Amino acid sequence: MTASHLQPFTFPREYYFPPFFSRQPNTITYTAQCEKWSKLILDYCRAKRIWRLSLVDAVEGELFWNKPLNRRLSLPDAREIIDVMKSKEGRAEWLSKERNTALIYWRNPEEWAAVIAEWVEETAQKGVVLTVYELTEGDLSASQEFHGMDAEVLQKALGVLVKRGKAQVFGSEDQQGVKFF
Image 1 (tube, one colour):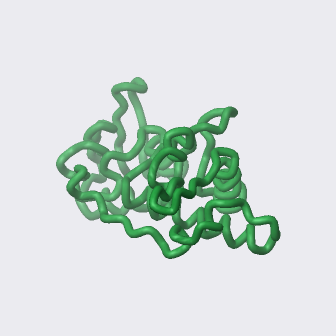
Image 2 (image 1 turned 90 degrees about the horizontal axis):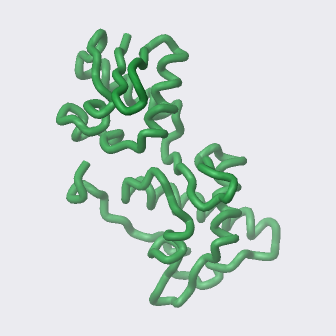
């Protein structure tokens, strides 16, 4: 999808409430705060088609910094929320032990595998060999939500299809092909 296909994003009402940007001391309130931040991050990344979220960059951007309110989520608090998304929901995965960048799963790899498998069925791609590039960047997939997918997320989704016996991945890392069954 091109930039013109990006969905417009409307921030939820909590985003305009200054305490939303400060870690809440009460456990129940903090749990609710983490759930709202998690939903916001997932919705934002989906609308903006962000697969890899650099927290160092994100705390400087609109996701974690409400400039009109002059309120910003701190980097340690953003890391904590991603930790919650990873451990409780399986919706994030750190890419390094430094915890600066995470894969954000608005759909997890199993869900992406199902989306890709459905597309394979609908477009009669069974038995056809496609390059990974054709799958995520080709004209056939241009209207699909997985178009432009991060290579690491795609590999995880294809891994699910391989385990289910619905695909075979072959070739070298930079020139992989996929055959769907």
